[in-house]
Image (cartoon, rainbow, N blue to C red; front, side, top):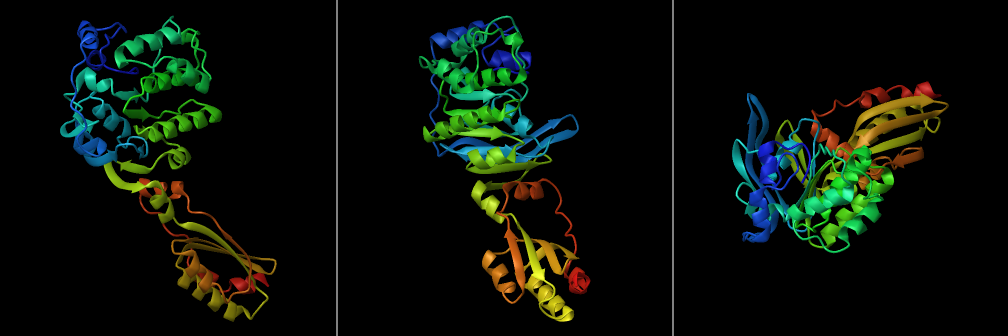
Length: 364
């Protein structure tokens, strides 16, 4: 593990603040401590987690569980508590109340033996020094546990990283790659990754997502945080959404995506029937289809209706069946829309069916 750790956290990881091995950690490596095996279906459990920094309550009774062999995204706006939750899971900081477990073992009592079963990438990865990436990874391997032969080189090839360059000369993206290699190289049971694609170019982001899928296929568990909703949609089975230090939703990615509204653009021929009759028919259809945030624009003999549809496609098609529709565009439900609605207060609907009145006349 690496990153912005306190001296206490670094010592807990088996490292001295200057990067050297602690004597107790070295002894532990010679005689691995027995570790309690996982006894349930969940690889990660967070129960009643509360954390206060002075008067500020960063986490408030956070509860969620990540089943073994799955990928969960931990998402939320800045300051929601994602990094604090992950640091408590790794016992880098201690909670005010509540408990957490990784691989069936209490985070606070698992010690170095538990850490060797976990791969961790901190959100603020700070790497300095004259040594090469290869030597730094060898140092980390002595702490993390056995690394399969050739594993580091394979990961470096996939992420396109030159291991022989001095760490201090690496760009932010290449340092991030080094952090990812140290998290994955010992094939841990659980991966906890805080903003893992920060600084990576799009091609390497795709390779990272392939690594995550491979880890899941191998039965490993991944908890990752990200502000990139599209990568959560691609990689995760489910999401835990935090807002203001509390869980507002735990849901499968596909379930959450399907709950999002569809954007609809409907174009109607304004000259097909008398204006008042068309106004009435259009307003009735909008109500029947359950459209919201309705905006109407009349031009060049047509009426464009832009709206959001939260109901089924069948209900919408039935509602507009009697209209002189010249064009219809239905966008797929978008996970980002669903997530953003949970980040803050519900948006105020724009417009209403009353905006339709007279629109067809304006289009003539």
